[in-house]
Amino acid sequence: MTSRFSELRQQLLQETRQKVAASVDDDQLIIQAVTMLDLLEQSANKLAKKVREWYGLRLPELDKSVKEHPEFLARATSGSTADLLKSLGVSDERTMGGMHGKNDEKAVDEALNAVKALYDERERLLAYIEEKMQTRCPNVTILAGGKIGAQLLSHAGSLERLASVPSGTLQLYGAETALFRHLRDKRRHRSPKYGVIFNHPLVQKAKQEERGKAARALADKLSLCAKIDRFHGDLKAQEYKAALEKRFGVS
Image 1 (cartoon, rainbow, N blue to C red):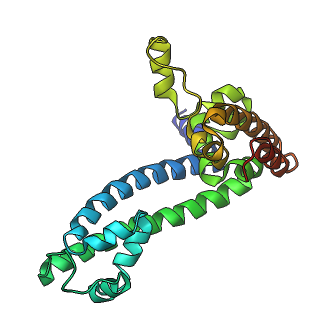
Image 2: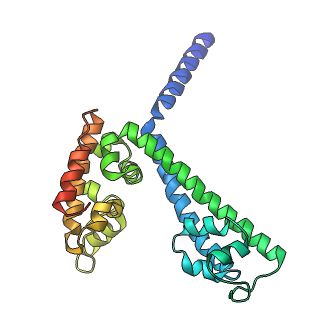
Image 3: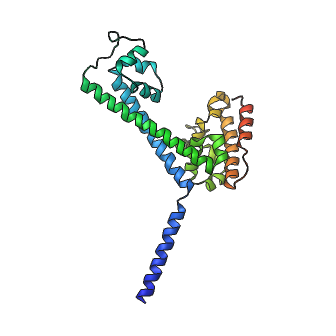
């Protein structure tokens, strides 16, 4: 009896292991990756702002001349201070910077390299997500891009779920907080028009008064793309993309 019970227990454990292993699919890998990407971007942007302030004590001219964080970090870590001053057309005598101690400069350089490494990792993670999305959701990726497509997939929880929700729900993924505020007090808070798809070029480039329409139209097509991808249909996203760009005068 004990031997029979032990065999049954081992069989159940093996079946459980197989089911757990089978539950780890591409959807879950993409969701984990894009969640990591969001956290990485938040941390990198906060640290970049702080390290720019710190570096500004050494060479404020660079901070004023470069807007984007990755470009700033690349230039700040690419050569000596003298080379940077020369590229900016500034001499040692004219710079407003006041940091001259070697230990001070070393500390700033190490911080710059650490933050730059975060942005480098961000690029590697973006490439991984893009590759996984092109395989899993080719139509969604063509229309939305790998990052936005992965964020939509993450909010839905799976491609199957993304393909089944109404386009209006897809449109508001990422705007849940604003939606709940609206539902609690409709007089004080307007209903949101878009969530993560706000970052899509179609919405960004559309005229201010047409952004809501652009978001709805984009959500409709993305919903169709998700259904096509769910059932492994043909590539239709390029047609949808061209039609949307023509409709809203965006290229």
